[in-house]
Image (cartoon, rainbow over all chains, first blue to last red):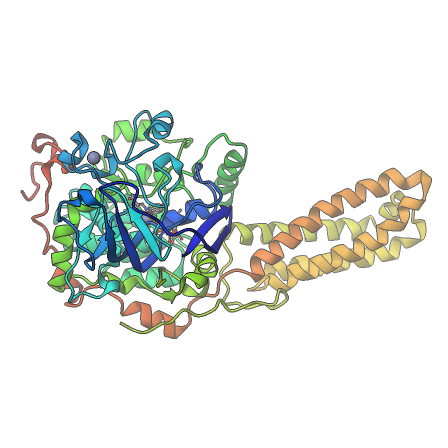
Length: 390
Length: 190
Ligand SMILES: NC(=O)c1ccc[n+]([C@@H]2O[C@H](COP(=O)([O-])OP(=O)(O)OC[C@H]3O[C@@H](n4cnc5c(N)ncnc54)[C@H](O)[C@@H]3O)[C@@H](O)[C@H]2O)c1
Ligand SMILES: [Zn+2]
Ligand SMILES: [Zn+2]
């Protein structure tokens, strides 16, 4: 079959690879009908995340049709069924899964010992996302093996199109969880850094959850345009001071809730800070750039909440711990507990409350994948979200 | 939803300059830095042209060095004064080539070889920075056209409109995630 394969930094190719087979009774094989490129894939593309190996198949946002089932699925999935696959592999039986904290499932990561070395404890297995999280083949391919498939799936109604439901596997629940974690009150101003796909979903979620005012910060004009369409006030941080504008919009008190939808590859609006972090990164003194974290801690209203869906991989530097502590800020973060939210979110799509397909700007085939990775990474051609159809 | 099939990225000739491009702020700041560097070097070359020429072992080239100084000042002013510094940074790259060609013969002169080597090393560094900066400027993404702005500006994602949807999900409050009741604001909508 054809698949998008990681060969090294900035080197992803559409290769022929062996078809996946059932390896365990709880496996299913899915024929992929649509998959997307996610901002998290860019951390692998740029090789900021350690733990990739040549030959790994990329992709963790995908959906398709069940074509083969293992013997242990107990009728939960049948051949021909249409499913979206959450990017988090979920056993459904461990203590964490029982509490609904699927992204820290204790059993789905077959390389749990590697994750434990890096993080102290294992975290869940993920599709197409480094050997730290299990080294499972990803979904930017014609077929995928889904482990623990009796729990790792989202069933979707036939009336909804692929493009309407595809993002249930990742960015929609991610934006949603980011906003839910912020415990939004009707009087709140919610500031969201990053107008990428996750930021766009977080804006819509914050509106649904009832924020009084949503502010989005980025510097890419077409992304800010789409943010305004979703009801956000925007700040272009290449021309305006984020801190000044946020204070203006909140009578000097700062936003109650701040969401980091940028993560480890943040750009600093100031060249000096950017240079500082780039040099430290190059010298391996820090692995992630913390520009957004620093700004959020500084500008957030005391007793406020920082919600961090943006992905970090290792160590950051110069975190103003004094401000974080003395202002009494709460930090909530994590990979998304996808299945915890999706039953509710499917209904909201079916009810017409939201149509997540608004974010798609580019479509292509798997062969177009390598070029579209570059287009998405460089924000060329006004690209915001790419969907591929194998 | 507006149809927007995948389009190939528009390819850019490195020498084109398009004011609709949006280089990242770091590249722009490097460009400004090069502008100030041009001005300073230009003033030095114009005022100390003869001394520089002697130092390089080309005592008769004073006027040439002064002429190069004028070129540097013009480029510096161009970079700092124009809306789009791209063509001016490419002009610097061409100027770097000229400078290197001028200094190169100095290597053959035993007494000034050290100075010429020093000058070439400095020129090499500046040229690398100029090329990187010029490429960064030329390959920067284009700003959206009016048509793209209009298209994206309609993509609310809310089939029933933003205001109709504000707060429809305000009952979603998973207590294990948003924290213990005792720690939440007293005025919060339960
Ligand atoms: N927690 C999860 O489960 C989860 C799931 C999906 C994605 N993510 C993460 O969310 C983040 C965003 O994903 P995406 O798909 O939207 O990616 P993206 O790269 O398309 O978007 C990032 C946006 O941030 C902007 N940005 C960069 N520096 C900034 C700064 N200093 N201030 C404000 N904006 C800045 C960029 O211009 C870009 O528009 C990534 O880190 C991704 O890994 C997390
Ligand atoms: Zn993702
Ligand atoms: Zn589990």
